[in-house]
Image (cartoon, rainbow, N blue to C red; front, side, top):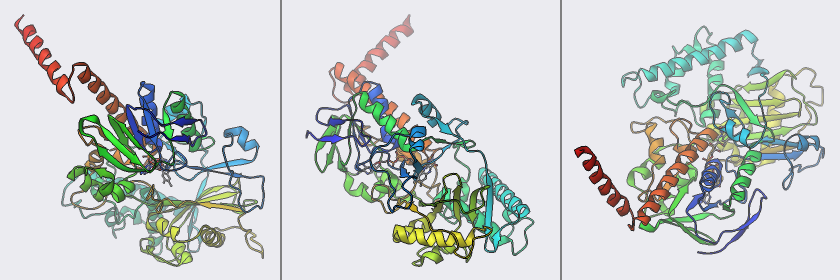
Length: 538
Ligand SMILES: Cc1cc2nc3c(=O)[nH]c(=O)nc-3n(C[C@H](O)[C@H](O)[C@H](O)COP(=O)(O)OP(=O)(O)OC[C@H]3O[C@@H](n4cnc5c(N)ncnc54)[C@H](O)[C@@H]3O)c2cc1C
């Protein structure tokens, strides 16, 4: 086994990765870090391998210095203290991957994790939500009508899906085929002129779905029992939580190697798993692979030796990864109405399902429903762009996107007294490129998409062990009910850590009984059967 010395990306410590391990955990996002931590807490020797220089995967907090006004690059380099202290120093932290603990008071396990780490959370007080149509902000009564129509339409789509019949919800039926049908509850009581506004508003769902309404299967609508209700955010951002978890892992003797991209995962039969990176080879009886679904799609044919089971390969290819990107514009002062917390900007031209493949940035924005979070206190707008439009955005440079988005929002967001000079330009901007990043390949796994063979059981298949249970799988894509969320990654980590511990314990028992693979246990079972028989005769 090769020896490599790497600094942990959390800045915790340097640790040599030489030695023998009980488990290898592949990928240091939420699921990998938590799996690794649970195993070290249970006295296993663990090596956590991460391809990126940083840990966290799709948990990523961007920090910028609010005091260096006007400078081009305000990104804070290196580690800064988090929370109140950092804010006093002018450091702002904004999450560009996961940003909310959904269902904080409704059972989300991330609540307990933050409490244990002593990381406070904030629960925002609701602010006004404005819907902006092609001719300006919609009147309050129309906003009420459209939002309650969408809520009713989603409830009846879910009721239809639950009443399952192949006649009413064929495999080819999409959410769009129901929600956007002429007689849909979405359009109830609306005039012909108002119908496109309701459709544009419904297309804001492209953001959480990561894909279009045309792609999501109607028959599984509302199947998942995910956490929802209260949204909370860890103070200082999700990277703070990730860093604290990694710190615990390292303190308990776990080893982290970052900048170590896994190139091959090989079965060594009874011996376990061999993992090959550019700089080393590592072996352990069990390995847990937490690579995102998009990475598995692109790499599974060459990554696994021998290939994974036919069923798993088929499901990896037929499940779907969505797109979502965020763009932040920071201003010297807030120029939008101060009482608004969210602007939903409806398309100003055409339907947003046709935005795909646009080479013209203003046209792409004009065809897309945008969600804009307005933080007046910190003078910033955070724009979310989902589905294919989110992916298409990545064809442009960050300055191009920031300039076009600023010009578009300054035109669309209604504000009194813009003045002759118009709205000031942003002094800092930042954007994500989740879709084209080779180690992410998209935002998250989408709900089940249209197609005869597709079902939520695909997510269960993605969680199944391979190589006689020496190779396990965790990650948001492997959880039936909480796919696409931090909760899904956490639940999958607890599940696979428990599975790995059981596997290692059984292996120890087998070795104690002198057997190799399962022989020892088989022998023990025979003894138990004999004594059970004896007991039955008493
Ligand atoms: C824009 C956006 C917004 C989101 N908002 C929310 C939200 O508000 N609330 C919520 O609950 N969830 C949200 N999510 C989802 C949440 O972030 C993810 O579900 C979760 O972080 C996934 O964790 P994971 O461990 O499964 O995967 P990841 O975090 O992707 O971890 C996988 C790790 O594997 C590494 N890796 C990949 N290939 C290799 C290789 N070959 N060798 C070594 N390492 C490798 C990657 O670098 C990565 O670190 C959001 C996601 C995005 C993208």
